[in-house]
Image 1 (cartoon, helix red, strand yellow):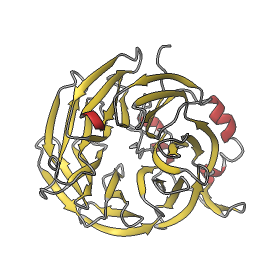
Image 2 (cartoon, rainbow, N blue to C red):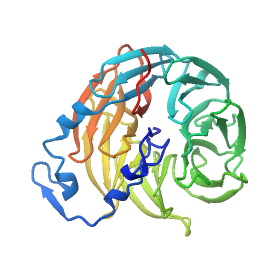
Image 3 (cartoon, rainbow, N blue to C red):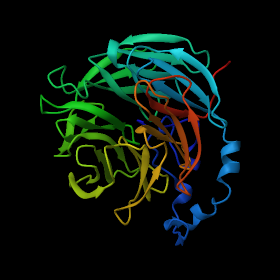
Length: 378
């Protein structure tokens, strides 16, 4: 996360079933002054400064669980979100790549890319159900109401499949397919359902574009490009802007909805992927796929890179990330190659600091990640 949710209300600034790319918060809709934190030169809002010195206590209080898939081992590991202790490990299919959870349905959905399958896991009982989806299911996100899960297809494989996403009904796990681009060579990579539930935005790694689809009709509202290797996209809650990661040129792009054009391009580093807005929408957090593993923090008002935070050792590579609904933490995966030991970094967003890192219990590359306020029955 892609990208993520859990039973929070709008009062906390987040809508149900969206957490990977969090982006709404009424309680932060106030003017705040800014001040510079001399140690490191980070500029933070006053509301954020109140968190300095308290984030470790907050981390200890935080409940819930963090769900991580390992694409080499084909497995899911569930961690305690507070301690980082592995709670349970399940086999979920070869090429397990990404994960999301519909709290409404009480199901996790994992793309098993190598076997053209999405694996559904009951979040309480951990009962597993395979769903045939293809070709090459890649990234996955739930709708705001949790009734639908959007799956991208053949994201990095030219000539396979078509420009489509698969929509899975969380009620019965039935699957439908929808065309995502007028370019027959394009392939979807990152889906993002809009907060209003009527539009889904799609980043196309092959095809270098971001498109907007009307969900009820399945028609394309607009397409914007070129965005070189467009990976992930997130919308502002009022539908003013989109933010897209451009893995091919190391930037994030701001797209003005209505003008349907790129209005800012901000260099952030090597191979940006996951994009997450804090509830105030003043900060964009970006996972970086380069080495060493890192997160970039972008000031969305100044349209500039604020800082880059290393989350793994010198020999690690970045993967995906998810933000908690309150915008206080990002959980990010990193790996050390197929035969190495990767892990999860817990990053406190207001202070731009790594609170803890948890080693993955086994070899292979942990990749997809999701946060849930709930824990499974053990």
